[in-house]
Length: 533
Image 1: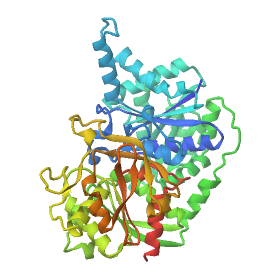
Image 2: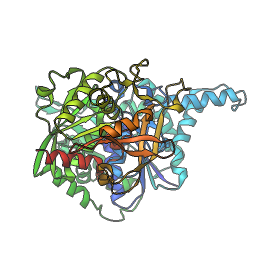
Image 3: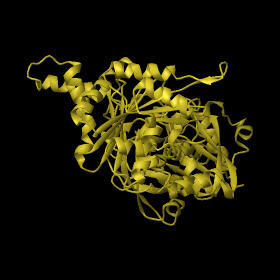
Image 4: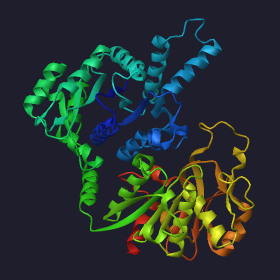
């Protein structure tokens, strides 16, 4: 039977439960254990696929087509192991399943209640990964904070599971805040005490406390927290603000988080954690030999989490080139043909980000025109690739009203059109072309140089595609389709013949980039930007 670890949070959101969970998993993995992490999200949406990025950050997509919370991106980037549908559970999914069962008569006329029916379904979902037999340890992150009304069924499910699992088979790590009051000149433990009290009121005693802080916690404060929160002193750990999220595993190693966890679960330490590759990555991250500035053009830049995987993929790519990538976040609504030089002129690379809808679309097209005409390395992702097609049609092919039917259904030149398989679909959630799909590259091409092989697999999230009716005209004029999905003859990659480095991709390469395996497309993009200096 696998061991279960539950990670909860208190006092405030955004303390970094996902990073702590991923860091612990990394340490346990480095000791030789097979580990996975799942996220339980208390919101009633079935998944984040229909959420505005301003609401919840980016929507991460797994190989099997699940639209999930962005924390799954952290899990994959740290562990270098793919996640799946089973790694993200929402209240919407829980209630949808229970209500469907009720309609089918599965409960035999019983009154359907939060306890036991909702909590039983939560526990069933938690155990799904354990039933695969692939993992020795399963870490479950509970979204939100203790005390939230929507989190109560999850906390109750955790209470029940701890009792059912028995001693040594499950534990709870509670992440909380120890704020520093500058006026008083001291750290305050009361928020942590209240947070643990709220957890205790739900019947859950935390086994380990991880205290987020901006100042180092003294032994006296640790003992005070341990005394009032009923945990052992060695189970009160400090999580001080870090320069980078990639520092956190080493900080948690220093705090002996993995040792405390293994001790409480009665598991052997096996071996000292091998983190040589991780330390090498950090050394290169903190000691670059050069630096460049790359612009990310998007319409959600006020919330950087809306492009979290892209930002992290650029960090990975920078490290692989021993280069610091300085990102300029540029709102696409602020770019015009007239101000493109002042907005973009100092950039060594331009990345046009994915998105939906026509807000800011003309700014993206103006940025792509600037990159094309000024020979600046360019990478377009999903809508970014589609905008590159529209820009080329308008300004090279002379089709002035060329557009996507997503933005202009009546355009006479629909160079981007809705996929045939999407035309009869009206529901929004989970209905796009999602997850892993095959792409076949042509050689010679820049795309083939990037990947070094003919067949690749990438993750997708889109409804619209390149309109093949215009393909011959595009290729004659110099925009080549160098990546094709053979099953549907869909154009997956376009690149310019007469440009140092200009590639647009319909898929999302950022989802596959990890610390151990930076995505080659981002790595070559950064290399091209370096050569453009």
